[in-house]
Image (cartoon, rainbow, N blue to C red; front, top):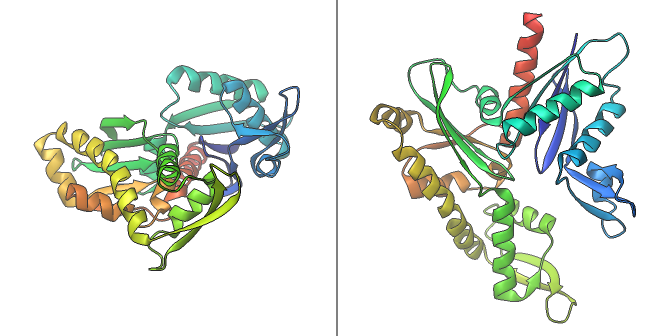
Length: 309
């Protein structure tokens, strides 16, 4: 039996095998004039400006993306049994996950299993979830943010926020447009946020003037970035606070002692954990390589399936 893992995100898709991430690329597709998929991932990104390029919006487009990966890595060979484990964002309901499962079976998988991102994140972060003492996992992804309290090997209570990485990029871009009449690309905004706090120097932003359509640049200070980021993160802190108030006194006491472990691509932005800690007065800890925590969890699950074979 061969074992394959899929970390299906709205921003990035990863293909995992033998404790290695073999494919780690943007969840983008490039379409030809007949709306047929002609490239995926990094190749699709490079076709921006010459082809229609965007993230998948329908399951049929996600199927095209996954099928290309399966073909590249010869995933389902004749006379070879293959187990696929995948996880998908919380924005996918059980019915959609079942459809993905059935599609992968149709492509040649022997067995297909899936589970929640939060569960994989907790395993990837090595959270102690099998004790009676509560542990908390916060996943901050591109499409949404999720939080859960674990104890005795199960999720005791969870909550989902539709406010994720896409929204923080949109809000920051809108702030630049409103204050400077400048249109800036999403990749530039992503890089800008990753630079936050790494230097005291002001940051130069390149974009297109919304009035003249000419290239223009502006300079904003680290303090300005921090102020905007704090206002945006405030929405998350309010959501987290509301979630914490739904927990029992025992669970709240456990979390005040153990803190909340965070993962997801947004945790790559410097100082987000510090801002949350200041706004909520609760300890926050970032898992190692936070954008890969779920993938690490998938690797652990695949290894357990191998051992059980």
